[in-house]
Length: 293
Length: 347
Image (cartoon, rainbow over the protein chains, first blue to last red):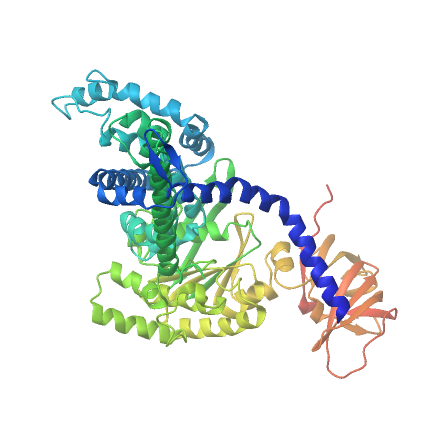
């Protein structure tokens, strides 16, 4: 009895000591800074007195009371949702076509899709800024030559531009998520539907899409959370005035130097994202429980 | 009257020929098996009938109508896939109903036919189960019900039983045969399992390397194999080098110390093949020694070393004493039980 107990405790001790380095790192670089940020959001701040380590709800009240913050959070999620929708609308057919390609083309186009991930977000967004730039930007020239618009569309410093650039930056995540789901599909299933009299459109709508929906949704969660917390793209395309949660937190920290308010914004964004991601994940799992048994 | 007709159908993938000169006439209600080892072109042929592959040449006709020009969705064939290919996001009933929905069958009739089809395959009460929550055998039945519910002109089965365990497979074979008999659906089964092909089919098409080796009833292909391949593939067989000798005006066929009057028209060196269960142990005949003796319940399997090389012998376990391992024996068989081919000249 006693020997087994000793063996068990020594096993548990060995496990703990093996996990300790990683645990220390996690606590050191994630848990402590996060806890400090949460604490910081309750501190006071003044133009001349700086940060005062007291416990007050001033920053939180300000965020709740001032419609400026509501508008900005609302914009953050609007932009993220629209960018997610665009990646889904373009990414799902893209992945489907990619999956049906053969031989060298498949590899080549996969590289084209994943390629952007190899370039820094800043460089990519600056590329979009060049395309959007002013009334003589390439994007506007193209739209006007094609006769799609009469007068130049404003892309820079607008939500439209931000959404387009974000959707492009996030596209690989959606395509990869959907592609993984497509690869799990039994290729004979499409043939089975065909043999039962379904047209190819019906096959995609009734057979393929419902099966890859979990992949689309997990891609959407990734794209949404990355878009909502994105910094570089909104900062460059949106500029100083069109702020989202991440750029606001940045400005509060580095320009206004109101760290407590910036901390409150950051914590709120984190809480909102965690709730949305965990919530939708639970919904998806319940919805597709039957399929994944 | 020919119902389904394949006329010199061929399929090549680049330089690789998968199927060559495949001609077959199927009558209505017949159960046909395509039998052969993997890579013999049997599944390719089935896929061409189904419409998932276009033949490189040749014609496929169903009731005189050209099938190749018809897209798979309009062929009206029922197919059961090796992987079952059930729709995992639909319940059993929804799976079965899909083909009827595509045919715009009214809801009330649809529900009735789905229920009837599931009852037919013994799955009444499983309507609301999802495929992932069913056993392999149950999924197999759903796939069968899904193919049958559209009342297909031809039922195509692509190795449908190969993923089931041995006992389940035997049960399904009997059921499949019964269902097919009752409904009278013309059926084509692709299989590499000779027992399955023999126990289910009216006729077997034995294939090898993209070519038809023989078409015939199970008895025909087993008893009178048209080629060495067929003899080897269907059951076990022994092959002995033999030759015909003429002495005193009488031609005799000799294989070691076994001999018999030579059949007319046979001369020179020949290959003699005889099934192991047709060989008996006697006082005269091909001399040999038993190298191993294996008890398999209802029969004994003997491996022998004979004058003409290794041989296998199967004897019924009929209660009679059987020779021991290492015993010297003589192998004997009736002339009617063997088949002869001109010996292949060694290259």
